[in-house]
Amino acid sequence: MIKKKAGAKKPTAAPLRGSAPLRGSFGDHDFDAVRELARIASEFDLAEVETDPSGRIRVARRVERGGAVAAPVASAPAPGLSLMPAPAAAEKKDESAAMITSPFVGTFYRSPSPEAASFVDVGQTIRKGQVVCIVEAMKLMNEIESDLDGKVLDVLVKNGAHVEYGQPLFRIEKS
Image (cartoon, rainbow, N blue to C red; front, side):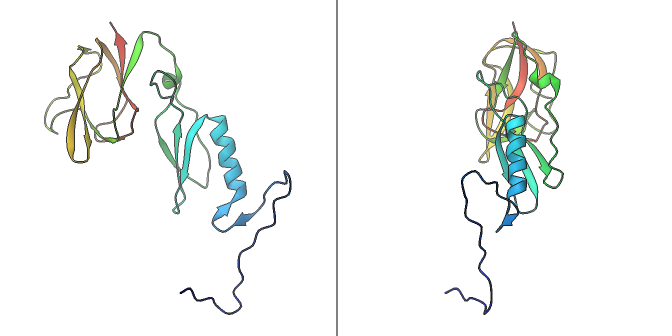
């Protein structure tokens, strides 16, 4: 049973009328901040904007057709509400380059063990079916194989980093 303090006021909000803008805050929502986040999401073509009670904001960019992602997931403190545009290299279109993406959510590892050499390095030629990394998901170590022949142009994720489904791991120059 919920007890109500004597004299405690119940939060109220002005009714919405037509296209009148919301101002101020209601409950835990600051509508001016929400409006600013919506403007930023539109300007930077964001797919997700997530906030938490500590004031952190997590954003994800839209996935383009063909599996390429415009930029990795980023996290920033809420008070500044400043987002930097994606690096030019991530937005650059290269017809001869392809991406190897993560088939699921997990932790990215470049080598089979911390003391072992990386499966592949930048500049190395790879073959279809060759193991390029491991993604750990639900305590299982899953070897990720290349689905094409080519040369590794970039490793897009740091060793030990969390990766999302469809997130690019490697940029490959097709041969």
